[in-house]
Image (cartoon, rainbow, N blue to C red; front, side):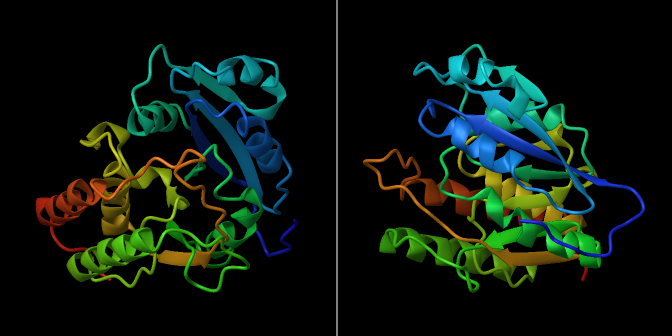
Length: 246
């Protein structure tokens, strides 16, 4: 999809960070969808991090070097947090976007995520599965309740109005986050990243995205037990520095 908007004189470069662990069935499909996105004023820098896959993911990636700019093969599995840190550390774009390798989130929604950047110079754009998405696969009620709870705690402590802080799509101006400052490596890392960039952002937006969530049988990894660490991170980040000004 092409978005025709008034664009800045120079292209905005967005680094797409794609961590992958044993995603041989979907990784090429994701990369092909990313490559198909043509948005006026936006240039994509695709960085793939293979997190020690053992199912052939690394081998299929090696055959499709045309689909990415940089490829980082990790010697062993360190988890999504470690893979993201490796990818972000070599990114050179004006903005960073996190893209999962499992097709739960569709790159066709980039046009919506980048619109606040092109129109309003947004510094952070958070995707939302709950703000008028085109379509959403029905997923676990417990996950929705957990997300609502996390979002409520985040909004309460940061004076924000997000609707879906654990959406997989987060775009932020790269200069807002020093990747070496990240303390967490698990599922709570997303909350830490969002806390840090929102605190520094001059303009933060949400954009609706569709969702095609996997079941546990299909490979979904997050569990209810991760909520405790996420809430702990939200709280600790809030009190590590002053509340953001708006």
